[in-house]
Every structure is written in structure tokens, then in C-alpha cells.
Length: 453
Image 1 (spheres, rainbow, N blue to C red):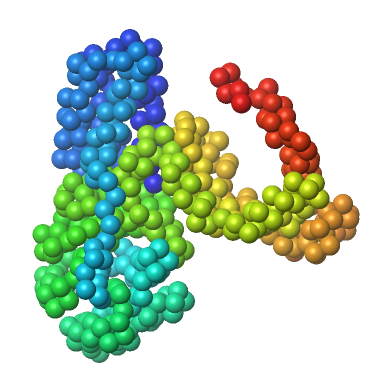
Image 2: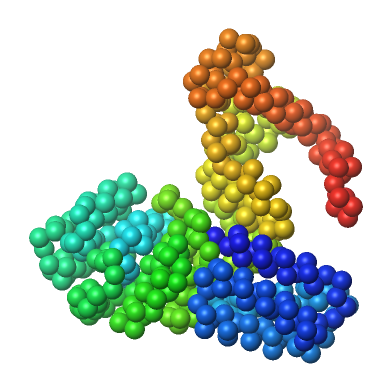
């Protein structure tokens, strides 16, 4: 989401290299670039003005420690202000209430409310072991109720049935009563959305809020809408006692302005980010981690969490034992590694969390994409079990069959087999005593100075 902003801020740091100290002139020049970067990212103008002034006051007259360059000092100040802008720490839901805790979801049509209801329900079920009921009172959008019913059932969530000819007030009253009867921990209410804010919409959702007295009222913001999303958030914050915000579609080609503006404009914390279409693609919003990613410093803590949550430990242990015994790494193992990488959000999502990725040229990053992983998986899936276990049996005619089955070319099959043989050799080296250390020493000759293992 922050690719362009990260690139511009990285350029600011590079331009400050070689400067002996921070002065009014070089601070002003750097902050002009930061200001342009934020405006291009669609951050609200009043937010940009306050942000730049705070960074300027922090930086002026600051003592430069011998261990820090002027660029590092400025970027530290920018990072601190980004964290302050987005909220000092992660804010959680208010679940410490007599059950059922009611969560009311508000937002415009198309922001992703209904899918976010299912994602939030799944997150509460998986992370907090809560019994969750969902209900839709969107009687205006065709198939909205059916969409939530399918999502709820697919993810093991309770669903309270409603119909388009019922009044939203009657729906939520009945749903709340049923949730109490079934001893539900949480009731998530999907309210109606509109294409634009109108008086009838606001009156209806205020009425629902008065009846439900929710423990949390969350506003769903489509981060792709930029400044429009911030304006609608401001209108909802005026009409409703919001407790938090969920940013959706942050994995898309968004400029990031909504994330940097919405808290300042509404005064309400961002609690979650939607990172994709899958039901588990909802993650808590950590301002300090997002700030680090914006500045190209990576997000190692989130990377560790993703690996811990999505890695199949049994498969990983089985593979580790196999490699240790030197019994061979085959295409079945390789396919499993590809599958686990896709479960963790794909290659781009993992690379995005690594420090320094923002300094890699865009052309190089564009060559790294998840389509290649999908293509590799399709080629392996088109092989027989024997071919996966014993790749050496794959001759010319088999390659043609595999290419036809996977929608690829024979050259692609040859490339896969060549890469796989290289991986096999690497795994054999690792299986020997001191193999990993020897392998790293061998690789070190190709690494830049200062990166020796």
C-alpha cells in the first residue's frame, strides 16, 4: 500500500547522506520532499501541515550523536511522528462486557463491510475462542443477507436469518435476543451501506446504535478511496460514537493516505487492516510496525507472527528430519513449501516485511510476483506421483504432457527442473556436518562488503 511513499522517503534519506549536520536549510529541503510524498499519497492537507511542523520542530537544533547520520536522525523523527499520527499502540476490541458483546459495523456500500464481518468473526473465533453470531440488517442491497449467510456458514460462525422485507430495527432486536438465548460471546451486526452519505442512512444507524448499545462501533474504510474515505469517516464520526476503524483493501494499489489521515481526522484508532480476500486476511493494526514498513525498515515482528501462525509445524519437522538424514528433497517437498508460502500471504507479502526492501529498484521488485509461485505449483500438480518423487524419469514426452496440463511451455518445465536440482544440491550440503556453515561461507563471496556471515 505504501510503495510510492516508501520510495520517496528513501530518496530523502539518500539525499541527506554526506551532510555533516542538520541545518535549517537541509531540514527545509528534506521536509519539502516529505511534504510532497505525503500529498501524493493522498494524506489530508491539514494532517500534512501538522506533521511537517512537528518533524521540523523535533529536528531543529537536535544534537547529532556520533553513531547517527543526519539522515538517520531525520528519519527517526519522521518515524516517531508517523507513530503518533496513527496512534501510539495497537488498540483492541472491548470484549470485557457481559455477553454478548455487540459489534456494530458501519460504512459506505462497497467498502467491504460484509466480508469484514466474516473476517472479524473468524479472527475472534481463532484468536480468542469466542462463540460468534452474525446478522445482516442490510435490506437495501440485493443478496447482502445471502452473502453474509454463505460467509458465516463457510467459517463456522452462527448466522441469524433475516429478510429484505423486515425492518432493520426488528432484525437487530430479534438477533440480540437470540444471541442471549444461545449464550453467544459476540454478536456482529452488518448495517446497511449506501453509495453516499444521506440523512436517512444516518438516522437508521443511530437508531440501531440506541437499541443495541454496542461495546464497539467500527467504521469500515476502503483505503483505495483515499481522501473520499477520510471525508466519509469524518461524517460517520460526527453522527456516531465510533470506537475504532478497520482499513480494508490495504493489499491493493492504495496510496496510503487513508491510513495516515483517518485517525487524525476522526480521533478514533485504527484497530485492524484487511490484507486480502481470504477470511484470515485481517490483522491487528500496529502503528509502530506500519511506520517501520513505510520507511523501508521492514516489519520483522509481523513476519515472525505470520510464520508462527501459518506454518504447518508437523510438515516442517518432517522436512527437517528428512534433510538431516540426507534422504532426499523431492518435488513433493518443494510443492509443500510453495503451498505454505502462499498460505503466508505470498512472496510479495513476505518480502514487504523484510528490512531494506524499499531500497530495491521498482523494476527488480516487479519481477518478484506470486504468479511465478502459482505457475510452479501448477507444473508440479500436473506431474504424476512417481514424477514428483523421482524427477529424473521426466523425459521429453513427459515434459510435453506436463506443459500441456499446466498451461506452460516445455522451457518452463526445464527451468523448474534445473532450479530444483540446484535446491537438491543445497539441501544435501545442509544435511552434512557443518553443512549450513560451509554453505554460508561459500555464498559470502557473492555478498557485498560488510555482509559476511
